[in-house]
Length: 273
Image 1 (cartoon, rainbow, N blue to C red):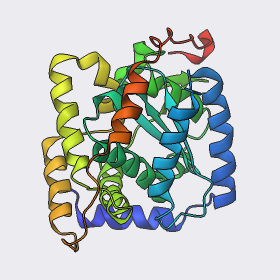
Image 2: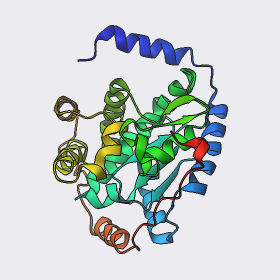
Image 3: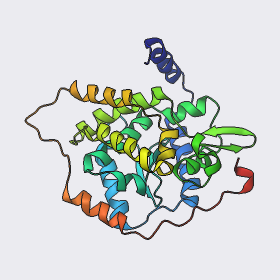
């Protein structure tokens, strides 16, 4: 259970954040360049265009609509997604293939957008984990650093760098995600439904989802909390929220027809644990 004083301390930390928005965007752009050079980013225009349009339809309805948002699909069957400072968001092929409906994928994007809105990666930087965040994210999104994947960390210069969120970060991103997708016209029920899918996948193919659970702490109580948030939304029941579309399934089929993901490129030995 998150205690009120913990929330207060978190907001005090953000209020005192010394990283400006311009610096945040510059840092995110720098990390994105490093990540894009190492990960198998999908460049198929139909796939990259769909994820960019879907992400923007949510992000442009938020309090940080002025950011130049970028959304990427990574060709790996590891189930994960991650957000960098300044609006750079990555979603793995495996997460798309695990999503049964559009609202589930939209919910995962809304959640990652929530991390950017709350500046969670910036908070990590403020606490001293700002160097080589890009390398840590590469390890988090793939099994390239499988020796440390369970902790979602790599050793760089003798310092453990973590590309993972605290439970408080996750709760806040859940809250933002519910509001974000609803405002954009998508059914927020996709958020807890996708969580349930991931919990089931952990039972029969844990190695595929271990990165997600390492970087996004998830338990049943968090699922129930997201359902409570949805129940408390002041929804106009006369307005139909989008649950699924044929376009999403065409997109998902196109993703599933991609060639088998290539083996991950090994990081230089001095960047691994």
